[in-house]
Amino acid sequence: MSEDLLKVIDLLKLRNCSKQTINNYISAIKRFKKHYEGEDIENFTETKILEYLKSNFVNKGGNASTINVNRAAIKYYYLVVFNKDFKNALLPACKVISKLPKVFSKNDIITLLKNSKSLRIQLMICFGYGSGLRITEVVSLNIKNIDLDNKRIKVLGKGGKERYTPLPNFTLKLLKVYYSRNETIIKKSGGYLFPASHKNSKKPYLVSGAMAASFRALLIKCDFSYDYTFHTLRHSFATHYIENDGDIWKLKAFLGHSSINTTMMYLHLAEDFTEIISPLDEVVK
Image 1 (cartoon, rainbow, N blue to C red):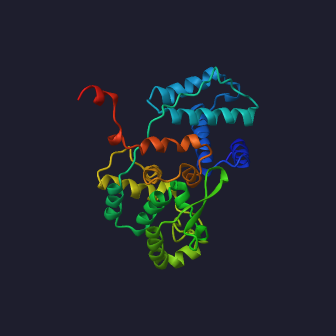
Image 2 (spheres, rainbow, N blue to C red):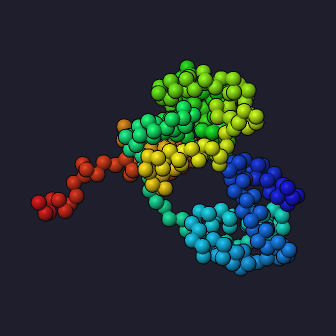
Image 3 (tube, helix red, strand yellow):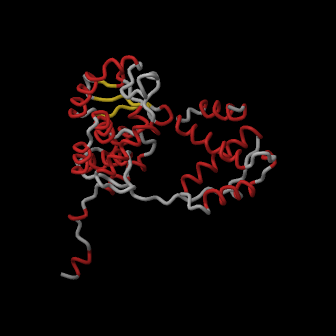
């Protein structure tokens, strides 16, 4: 890898950015450099960068989040490598439209578990829905993270923040069966529950590999739309927790949110509108 990209990686690691963030930034920078290969990119202005984003993402229907990631990566590259800080007014971020997330019903969860023939995928579903874990947190779980005595999981979340989240009884039962069948492989991998392969067992299970493909195949098999993802399990955990009169502040801790405002979204998702009386129903009967 080139010296400039290594410098970017080192500084992102120093900022304690996640592996996913680092990979996204480096991919975006590589794509930008390849697009202008042979040109003097050091002297580019905000206008040139804006043209790149428009032609490669905006005009092709790219979503706001994707555009913003590429914009942020390029800006950071210029700051780190060329000591050049682009002005936000001339290179604005796209406004991200906030949408309420999809949520699985409780019957949907049963459908997913029944239709999955893989114990590994079933266990991953349990960690996602039963404990509210992100996919990156699930695939990097180590057996040392499992606190059997207190029925909880120690999670290393975004920004290296540690937290505890519940370990349901059903997950625990499934985990014991899974561990007994894969004990040798797990021990060989250094304790990772989902090692990438037998040959390269020191590396955690890859998010972009078989896990993502297997779960997507399961969703298709169960006739769920493309809007549903593994992260929907986390949204469902939070929503159903609130529906069961769970405490919002405990949920914030379980999910690892920095702000309670992020967690408050689930209050609206869990609201039972069938019990709400609209003024119209009082006027027109």
